[in-house]
Image (cartoon, rainbow, N blue to C red; front, side, top):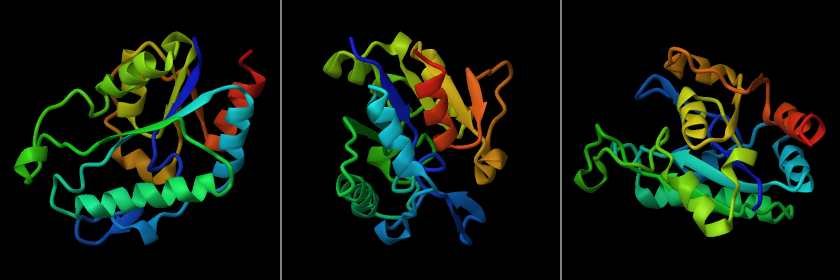
Length: 195
């Protein structure tokens, strides 16, 4: 069995953007708006060198909510993958949930098991790639990331990314395994403190 790091995307790998129409920080709606956070590439390389398989697990409800097209969201992902691949950083798999229970696009307006804190994506990774969830980690900037990882039997790291703090639900009793400042700090923690 292999161990993995499951990574949230927005606020973990790339910056959130402030949109005037919603007056909130949100995920990029267009490919050219994608900006990686500092030291993300080095952190991902460090995790790979620590023998972790890397998976991306991200909720992307902007299409369901009518804010952008599905093609634009897919273009953001393509830009991310191409950028990382050009630097010899490869994700094992990416799992996106495009649903939202309060969307306006009927086919994407639903309560699903792939939307974090649902664990369908982690179970799929386990079954497809032979991942030992008990030896794996979920890293993200939201309570839903920590709930997802915990629900799947992973250990968890909550990142203190400033724009995300106002969007946290502060779930009662929710405790990540570790709380760190950045993905860079998380990679150092996992490759130095975890055998």
